[in-house]
Length: 65
Image (cartoon, rainbow, N blue to C red; front, side, top):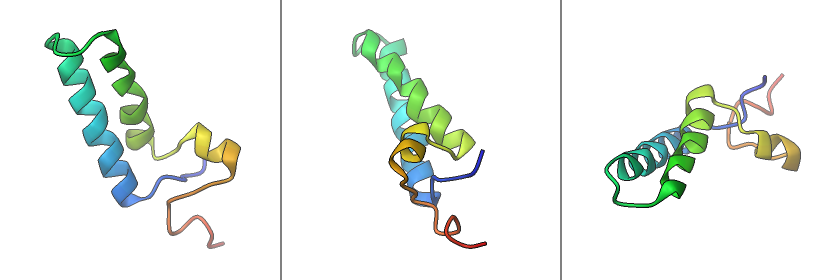
């Protein structure tokens, strides 16, 4: 898959994902904290299916050929 998640976006997704998973693992938040797996995975893989559906990209190199 083509990368559509840029550098700062990737870092934020990974951090938010880790925080949510950590809060869920410690019982600070409910089950919904495990949804942090989604931003973590999209940050690690560098591609976001929702961005693809909407035709968006935060990756500065995505427009170059």
